[in-house]
Length: 93
Image 1: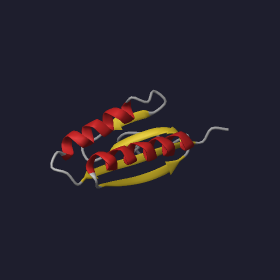
Image 2: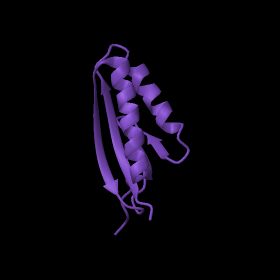
Image 3: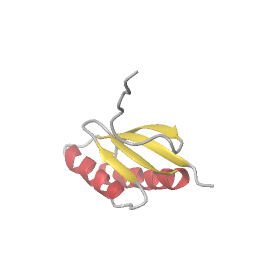
Image 4: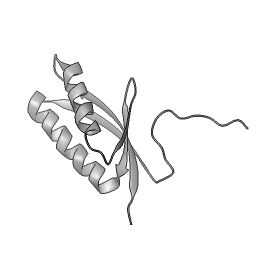
């Protein structure tokens, strides 16, 4: 049984060229065809299979740390198939 997870990610590299580092990180995450990715102003949503998502995030943050020395990665995780990515829309009552 496949378990789906959605991650809300914010990356804060402690580097002068932080925008390039964030852009590269997002491009690498987008390169995985098994993930649904939505980039927003302050965070990126990534949806995919739970174990694979955690594996790739671990690899990619290690890569950022190796490039920059230090970076902060803030993640929120939601479990389940019914959780989509992107902006939340309220429903009329």
